[in-house]
Structures are given as C-alpha cells and as structure tokens.
Image (spheres, rainbow, N blue to C red):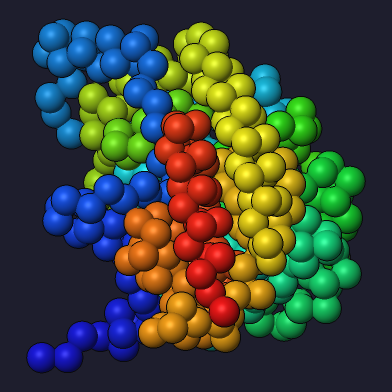
Length: 397
C-alpha cells in the first residue's frame, strides 16, 4: 500500500496545484483571476493549425512516428540552431518529446545516478528540483539575489562544485524571475564548467523568443561548450502551443541516444499531428510570435508600475519570459483579524480566498519571500488582479 521512496520524495507541482485550486473556486461561481499558470493566453497561430489539419486530411500520419521525432522536424530544429543560435547541431543531436518537461526528465534519467549532485540556479522552475530527486540524485541550490536580478554568479557556481557534481541546470530567460543571462555572464560560468571534466550543463531555453534584451545567448554556442551542454527547448511558450505538448533537447549524440532510449521505454514518440504543427512553427513566419512578444512587453510595463504602487512589495524588472517574482515578505506576520500570514503559501491561499487572485508561492521556486505572478493574461485582467491585490493587502495589520 506504500508508494515508492522516490515518489514520496517529490511534491505535486505547485503551479498545477494552484491552478487546480483556482479552478475549484471558479467551479463554485467565484470570479477568480488566475495568474498562476505559465500559459500564453493567445491562440496558436493559424498557419500552425492549418498544417496540423492538412496532416490529418493527408492521412499519412496515423502510425507511430520514430521515437526521437520525424526526421524532417529534427533537421529543421537543427537548422534553426545553426542559423539563429550559432550551434552546429545535426538531426542526430535532436530528440523531440512530449513537452520540454519530459525532455528534462529524459536527460535526468539518462545521465544521473543515485548520489550524484546537480547544481540548480535558484529561484528555479519547480520541476528541476523534483526531477533531480526522482532520479535519487541530490539537488544543490545556489541562490541568486534580487539585487543581482536573481542571477547566480560564476563564483557561486565554482564554490558549489564538488567531486559529486554531475550537472548544472538553469533557464534563461528564467522561470520564475524573468532574468536573462548575458553572453558575458554565461562565458564566465562556462569557464568554470570547463575546468571540471565531465561536468554537464542543462540550459533551458524554452522562453528564448520572449526575450526583451535582444541578446539570447545559447550556452552550447560558447567555445568548448558544445560537448558539455544539453539545450532544452520547445514550442509551448513562443508559439502558444502548450496543449500540443512538443518539446525537445539538442545535445551531444551520446546524450541524445540515451534520452532516446529512455523515451522509447516510457512514452515512445510525440504525437504525429503535433509534430506536423511544430514543423510549420519552426520553419514558418515568426510574425505572430513577434506580435505576442510585443503584447507581453506592454503587459510587463503595466504590471511593473502597478506592483510599485503596492506598499511593501519589491519587484525586479524582468528581462524576459512573462513573470514577475515580487518579494512580499513584508506582509508575513500580519493578520486580517482572523488569519496570520506566516509565509508565501499562506499569502497565496489567502489571496485566492479573499481577493480571488491566483498566484504561486515562491517557496516552490526556491525563495519563500516571493510569489510568482504570470502576466500571460489580458491587460483588463491584470489591472483588476493588481487592484484586488493592493486592496486586500491593505487590510493586513
């Protein structure tokens, strides 16, 4: 009757848990504004949908696809990285999976042994820590500060490396902070990595298109890092394709082969029709993506200014993705007369119950002082959500 130790060692995804709570309230007729899920509120661009429909009508994509993905899609992904990111990937380096989350899980299972250590840049996406523990390896959190835009430094990385360190994982642009590592910062980190034979980097680039800096540097493009880097990416964020579930890795062939072996035993290939949509996305016109990014840029400005109007809330100015990760710890220890807020979990649950705004506790991302707010929502909903937050927080004493 007992679950395995590895399952008992991980928690339910905090983002999915808060989204589920928000749905419970909505099902009861409560007007909840959900800012908890990292999900674009835009529809998938029409040319992608049209390609998927054509694939169905053609009647050729009814059979199991190759486990690592269709050859033409893998070639297109490799060509994209050659042209846009300066990384000489080939189709043999690409494994297409059921979302970037599975891509990361495949890699973790392929390269980690019990007792290995993985350095996680914190704040971090909630599943990094859980997936490391699922393999019975040990997560080692290295924390960035708001003063440094939540970014970890090369010196911190060097200090965290031990004889058991197998890999480093981070995202840029970052979920949950929106931080973007510059080329110079990544060069400094890569210099540290190259001093340690066998140390790998898992670089999550899922938000690469939602980058307001104009500088998206791939770790694998830096000198000496091609053989040390597993690049993770996908179609969910930049192409508004969350439900299509298409992610991928680009990695040295031996790691791609290992990930392919894992995937072959767990899920086999990604959905055939989703892959045809993904091919249209990566080879097609990026105008819809660019329009979405401009909308996110406007929303970032709106939310940043509205957050500044809430007393006691501190926020950095995110350079990418579609999140804010404000520090709300000034409200810890305060009460509305019946409830005392002790941490970010308390604050998020209280905000959902009293203000009907759904956020995600920062503790799940490695910093309990903060909460994650997604601005992948309409300007109307964002304005109303921030109004509610300001109003309800003002009741605390």
